[in-house]
View: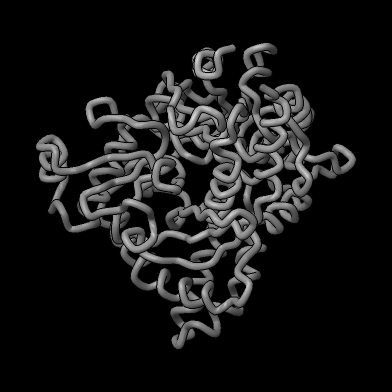
Length: 414
């Protein structure tokens, strides 16, 4: 068996994937397998008893938002009676930042990989502060979600579908990398490019100038507004590389606040998971490492696709948010070339003479070198509803790569 050839095939599929933002629709109408009592969450599979504070809070908030429960005690009782089903976003072609909880009536971006025909989905970004993805479910959080899904959402849906070509997410990322973004924690340039594309479409789609202004202000004030469609774009790219026979390339990395999980292209839909590490970085005033929840979120799909922590050399200013120095950002990217299969054809880094970002994590190289992928991430408080308390760097546990490699050897008789 030619593993190198299989890996090259997988990475070529990932790089050639062209994800296009095509629309916005309720999850129940487009997400495969979505149903009223199903809540999708970030990371690998997990049951209620093992869920972290932020994930539990987001589950409670989603049940109240959907009208399935009137309050927190009723929501918890529903879950404990077994009336709510849970599944990873990744098992339904979906991704969500932090807790990642997505329910049936929530609107999701529709991103289509027009090269290979697969689709991926992600919910709307709430912005910073006290938000559902960090486990908050107070009245103001739920009211914001309702506005996003009933006022802003329909305007965005009409605006996006009115574009004859949609938004090329790969092209947007390529340009944003040249403007100081890395696509995971720093999305200032990408969000402005997103807003630039959307603004005239929103102006035409909305019959109410006051609503249009409110929508555009909300997006413009949120430097993370593009993160969710970017994550869906990366999911569409990574899914194109999945299920390549004999490939040791990682196609999913995701965390649920308790476990860090990965999937491997040549090992089907099996998860390999181990306890998450807690990120280390810079803390917001009043918080310390003792307040932090272990790593959480599907946003590591960005590193899986060759950006985020793998493209830190493109974003020296990221260090003011996650800690460290610009030199460290460059070294972080250089280290990732040691565990990847290729250099990206479309994502390039000016500071490295436009060298392509490292792409295609090879579990063999991770185990052989002892180098695990670098991830830059937001840090959630361990209690539901407090929100983001910092940002920093984290790595997945080596154990999941070792377990995956043993499974690969067993499956292919090596």
